[in-house]
Amino acid sequence: MKKNFYLPVLGLMMSTSIFAQNQQETVKSIVDEATTNSQLKILAHQLLDVVGPRLVGSPEMKQAHDWAVKTYADWGIPAENEQWGVWKGWDRGITHIDLVSPRSVSLEGMQLAWSPSTSSKGVEAEVVILPEAKDSISFQNMLAQVKGKFVLISMPQPTGRPDDNWEKWATPESFEKMKKDRESQNDAWNTRIKTTGYSSRELPKILEKAGAVGVITSNWSRGFGVNKVFSAYTDKIPMFDIALEDYGLLYRLADYGDKPTIKVVAQSKDLGEVPTFNTIAQIKGSEKPEEYVILSAHFDSWDGAQGATDNGTGTLVMMEAMRILKKVYPNPKRTILVGHWGSEEQGLNGSRSFVKDHPEIVEGVQAVFNQDNGTGRVATISGNGFLNAYDYLGSWLNAVPDEVANIETNFPGAPGRGGSDYASFVAAVAPAFNLSSLSWDYWNYTWHTNRDTYDKIVWDDVQNNVILTAVLAYMASEDEDKTSREQIVLPINKRTGEQMTWPEARDSTRRGGLDD
Image (cartoon, rainbow, N blue to C red; front, side, top):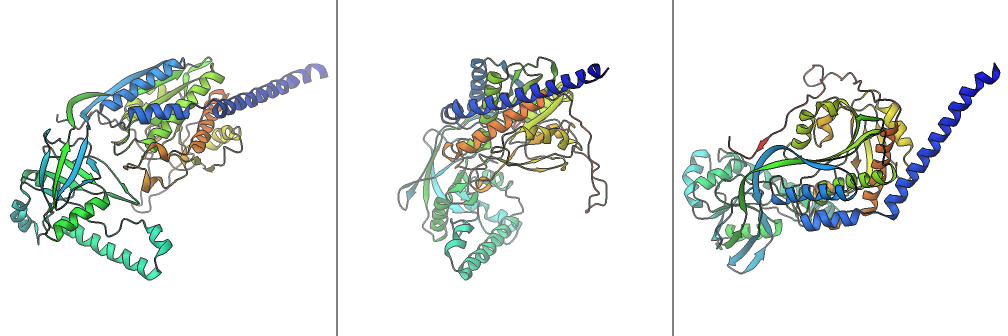
């Protein structure tokens, strides 16, 4: 009797020991492959240098999708481009902006996304400042001043030095004076905009209607030489962002009455309606193929630069993790799926479409691991309001090597409502987790800027994130249990006094930038 009693226990102990040994060997294999045979720099060159930025609706975006499918095929991983909508197609082409009077110099600047082009010969005209009016009626009477002119509509920054530079070198009195003067100037400019009777988004079309030949902005990002670069608000005339230093030059010349003249050649093309895609690749599960571990990263970017840290690095992490998993863990228990989402930047459109179009996959989600915010190593993970997230996510993290898993966790946390594609899955009550990175001055220097380039990548940190992602995917796939979707009871909203509710799943914008 005693022998029969202890045999199952002994068998269980041996089974547990074998699993632990296999787990350790697999994790070691993941680490070895990531560190000794890394493909990160090769992938980065192909994606960022050769393809470049990936604005939704651009030829580069389609080129990126096709490149990803081919790359996965080369690794033996089935992949496809799945259309979810259509968008206004646009090809940036070349922008050239030159000051031609009162002296000659090329200026740093570029067209904003989806901006109309100039003629092939370009446009040469005087630059003027947005008229300052007492009220909206006066502004209407002053609009004739902009006809045939380029119009400056952004506040000229009093300094191109970021605050930390001032704080390091200036006297406390000088630093405080600068901030006070800048705040006063900002208030005055906001008043100038307000008295036109239009918002800053509405003004470009009003100036276009009044006969301006172009609109010029400068959206400084509070760092040396760095501007945010987004989209145009004009339909027929070009709209540009010019670097703080050169914008200030134009503004001062106009303000002092020197009548600056610039010549602009912008060779963008309106491509009409084009399809938009997600790239989906899968390593099919061997035991539970209808359950899914999803690796998630948006594929698109704004196109002020290469989109290296937003979200080239997240894309590289997920691709390299998939490559490694295919090599060291080719027969996962659950299906491991990677989603490279389109048009995250315009409202999580690719991932929202996927969630809407594939309820069967969402129902089978074991976990979603999303990475987006920059090149830094992952530093924080929230349970996103899933009551029992600690039980499974904590267990998976325990298998990650100590030198990789220096991560602050927040359990159970609160449901994420936006910001990146994990929120699309959270809204559908699928356990989704954002792998949040250290800053590396991301928000000022590379997020949506003209400096989001290859050279800003921190390779050791990205490699760290590859190991973390691959180990988490492996552990989630091997877990004996399906993850719990039980949600926390949300607190009372202090502002409204009402019970907070879980975010609701929303469909995407399926026709972007197109007239219905």
